[in-house]
Structures are given as C-alpha cells and as structure tokens.
Length: 245
Image (cartoon, rainbow, N blue to C red):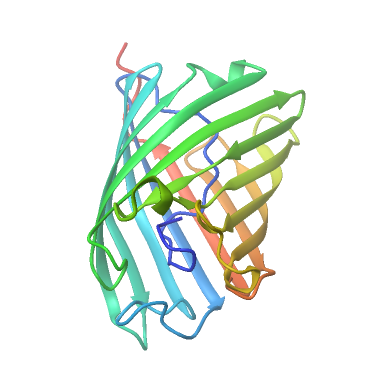
C-alpha cells in the first residue's frame, strides 16, 4: 500500500518470502478493481478510488537463493470519469529472504521499494516502502505478517506511515489454498490518524499454484470509514524461462 493513509494502491498482496530461483525470470500481473469505493479525491487532482481499475506488471529475477530483484513497470490505472487510462510511474524493489522459505517452519525476509510516481497517483514524486516479512508454516496453516513502513521522505522517522498486512492461509493440498488477509493503514508513527480516517480491509482469498499460471484472487470488504467498501483483486504469475543451473 502506498504512502498516505487513504492512497490508492497497485498491489494488494502479503509477502511470504518466496522468490524466483537464481537465473529465473518471473512476471506477475496485478489487477484490482474497486466497484464501491471512495468518491472524493484524497488530494487535489488524484485518481478517485470508486470505479477504478489499478495494477502493475511486476518483473522479477532470482539473483541468489536469498535475493530477488524486481521492477514494477508499468503501474497503471483505468478510470472512465477521472483521468481515463493512465501510466502512474514505476517501482524498483530488492527482496531479501531466508532461502527456500517454504521448506522452513519459521521464515523471514525484508523488501525495499523505491517508487517514482505521477502526481495524480501520489502527492509526492518519490516514495519508498520498507516491508519486513515474518511467518510460520505450521502443517497446513500459514501465518504471515508484514509490518510495513512507508515514507515520502518528509518528517524524518516521525513521518513514517504504518500500513501493515497479514495473512492466515489453509493449504487444502499442494496446489490450492484459501486465506483471510487484512490490510490496514493507521497513519504516521508519531501519532495515528483518528479511527474514522483509518483504512481497514478484510479479504477472502483463493490461491491456485502450479500449471501454466499461478492464480490468486479475492474480495475485500472495508469496515472503516476511511476504506473502500468493496474491492476485487486478481494476480496472475508464471516463470518466463526454465532454471538455468
């Protein structure tokens, strides 16, 4: 989730410390649609959430068993009444993880993102994300927490925004999983915004892994005054080349 308690987002995902194997390129297409969302702009000239389609093409390359390099290009939106079809910028990310996270009961990682934004997408041209990853694989259950901190490089450490995400998943088998996810935005660390301005969404999610495409889809319901009432997401990914080792 980008900087700002009420900002739009191109990616609705809890990171699980899984990365592409060394030498492998992966492409993930993120799409999320908000049929019932906020109708007022969050800052002058921004894309309005209601009836907007937002997403990104996420290109990833496995550099080491513990390091994946990523590029989001393009980040895009489509809104019939507000701005139309737009390119919103790009993001570079570096993801460091415990190698082969799926093989361990306890796994962890950290993701860094550097974003260059159009000013109708974010109120600041440059923003960044710091996303720790903490998780447990307990038999068929997964418990994952991403205590995300976002910054637009104003206000120093006090200006960091706390936008955590969490996931509890039950793996039906090695291909199918069902999950509940939570996405929140509390505002700056030095003082959370009032509750009626906070962002809180709870999601029901289904994953299918393997075959031609990996698929994650879900429906999210906002339960705070500062959230969108209904959002849908679809993520499609696959490796673009075979293992080179």
